[in-house]
Amino acid sequence: MTESSPFGLHRVVMEPGDTPALPQQAAKVNPTAEIGPDEVRISVEVLNLDAASYRQLARTHTDVTGAVDGLALRRQVLDIVAERGKMQNPVTGSGAC
Image 1 (cartoon, rainbow, N blue to C red):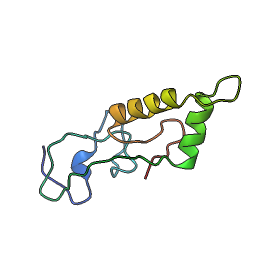
Image 2 (image 1 turned 90 degrees about the vertical axis):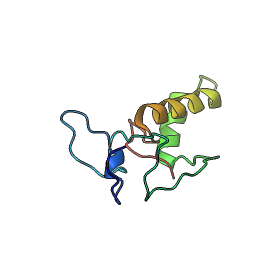
Image 3 (image 1 turned 120 degrees about the horizontal axis):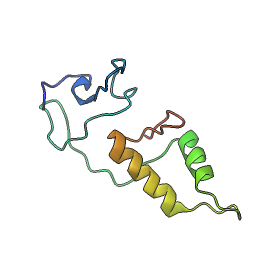
Image 4 (image 1 turned 180 degrees about the vertical axis):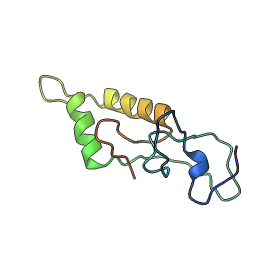
């Protein structure tokens, strides 16, 4: 891992053409398991999606009867986290808490 930053800048993954950003605004962060001296490892059991993300994802995975496919929604959240290193909905730009 590169030198640690108290603002988490060492976690931001910059693609060509990206504007420098803090981790919250960055499109992608490095979720590597290696932690810096000013970082803390936590175990996450529940991810609370923000309302905008949930509504958008639920609409995407609602069938003709109006039922939300919870497993498909869960898979998409896991795909977003795997791709971006964090939960940041690429459609709404919002995340989770």
